[in-house]
Amino acid sequence: MEVFLSWSKKPSQQYAEVFHKFLPIALQHVNTFMSTHSIEKGDNGTSKIFDTLSETGVGILFLTPNNIQESWLNFEAGALYKGVRKNRVMPLLFDGDKDLLKGPITNLQAGIYNKEEVFSIFEVINNMSSSEKIDPERLKSSFDLIWPKIEKEVMDVSKNTEYSNEELEVDNTELKFQQILDELQKLKSNNSKSFEVQKFSEEDSRQLYKVCEEFFSNHEPTDPKIDSIIIDVVNNKFKKAKLNDKLSVYNIMKFYQHNVYSKELEPSENTSGIIE
Image (cartoon, rainbow, N blue to C red; front, side):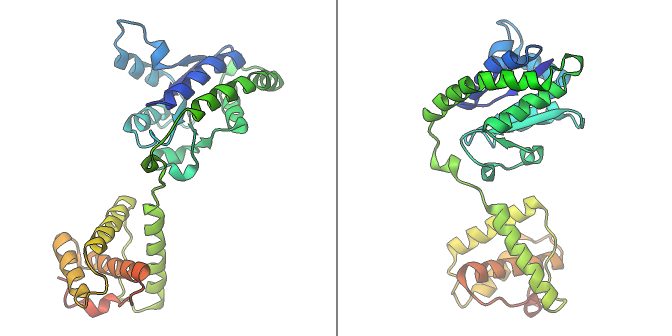
């Protein structure tokens, strides 16, 4: 049985090396595919990786704060999963917590590196081994023997790794924006029907939140003309949008102003004749 080890950058590569070394000791019928070891000199490396991804349905993604947004990891995760439910793609996060995760990988039930999570990965691989599957008690005994060595090598890598503040910063954009949308929905249910709040996709929400942040970083929220400036932005930035969408954007920007700067929020009915 072959298990694909997906990594990108250091220290992700070093963590993958630890599993490349110890996984076949606990599960002797398992071969690990790791690009730094499994591609011979003279081979077409990219073709070899693609071939292995197409043939393999089990993989471990080695996530670290400096590679979580790497498109290559998302590509390998998708190639391993292939939309087949029985396939297993297991993200394992080192040196951080789940708040750092974003994108499609969040749907794969990522684990945080610790003894229990690592053993559960070994169990999944063993359970997918069909006729080669070993007795669970035997696996537990083998794992307990090698765990101190795994832990030591992982800790050695971790102690010698530093991340930038940007890499360790949690992106709360979606959370913040969802909170704003939730509050707006409450206002909508308690106010007139003309108080428009449309449903936006996650990507639209992120973009709108950035529009709000950019706008209020360049405009004084207490400016007496702020309403007309917001209306101009809505009319210019969202020229092709439907009226209800524009009214929703206006309300979101006004609510952002209210939420962040404690300014009074006015329903969109007061602007129905101004927003084009």
